[in-house]
Image (cartoon, rainbow, N blue to C red; front, side, top):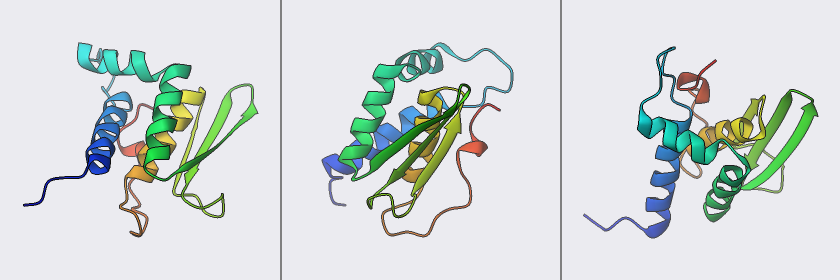
Length: 123
């Protein structure tokens, strides 16, 4: 079996981190490992890390503050002609995490999977 590429390993790590950040703990306290990932990603430095990781995967970010309580993020491979991953949330990091999760949920060139971040995130 061939060795996974560095890019594939980075994609897997980014996907795992986003999965922990968006994990639905069903009202129970999050385990310490999940709290640690959330403490890292639920702030502006975490947004930067996710955006950098997505950029390495070939995605560009478009982000907007719709109103005082709604942020929207879109990741796409083409100059905003299509959206590979969409996300919205009360915080910029939540919107970016959802958008990245949705974009990474499909292989490049693959049809969009209908299951998305809503399957793993807290309401």
